[in-house]
Amino acid sequence: MESNGHRHYEDDLWGAPRGRDEQNRFEGIEARIPPGVKRILDCGCGDGALGHRLMDKYTVTGCDLAAAPLSHCRFETFQSSLVEITAEDRNFDLVISSEVLEHMMPGDYEKACRELERVANEWILVTVPNREDLDYARQQCPHCGTIFHDAWHVRSIDEDLLARSFRDFVPKEWFRVGHKQRLDVILRTRLRNRILGYPRLKPNRQCPLCSQFGSSSGRHENPAATRVEAPQDGVYRMLRRFALRVLPGRERWLGCLLQRR
Image 1 (cartoon, rainbow, N blue to C red):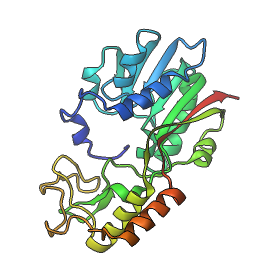
Image 2 (image 1 turned 135 degrees about the horizontal axis):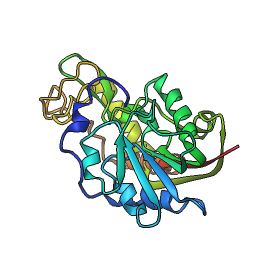
Image 3 (image 1 turned 60 degrees about the vertical axis):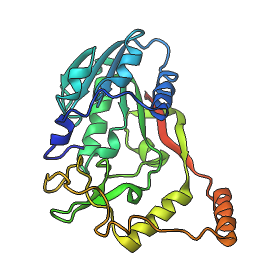
Image 4 (image 1 turned 180 degrees about the vertical axis):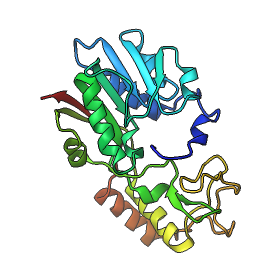
């Protein structure tokens, strides 16, 4: 997220092995790299988990807002914000933005899309959370009361918004990867938030407004009221089966390969 106070990005939270779900996302990205691509810029590369998969086949450069994750990268990197990428125009065959745009504040989001277009020669490959329900992962800061997304996501993105976000590039291929998120679980969490309030700020999370880190366990004010107990009777099971048919869920991530007009 492009905002003040990114101390938690500078903490030693990087370099951990990725789970199978994220490996599926990396595989989905790699499978859609067009023929002829040689130079790749991974914008918001983090600790280089994706770039390390690609560096044997391509010349990979990474950039990230924070310095700490870049120390884990084994390819060329530079520290840069996406709203002003310190690279020359059309300098890379392919520019990748994976799990970044959902963090961008209004104004910064539009600037970032223009910058991705500026430094990409022909291709842009984007992945974002797939029509994310932002309320599902919100928590509340005990210091200032701010309610915010656990991972600092500030927008939910679908195909229409993503396609309209780029002026000089058009979608060539859409794809979806990751496990299917059960919509009945999301709805149950939304109900819990309405009844009990949002979970407290976790110790390793930073409030985007006051920059304070959580000091609680991440539970609600009343430790005994951390979740809504659903009745496990026949009616509930029948309704749940019906919900799974009507609301079967959707893949975790949405991806798009875009080509210059």
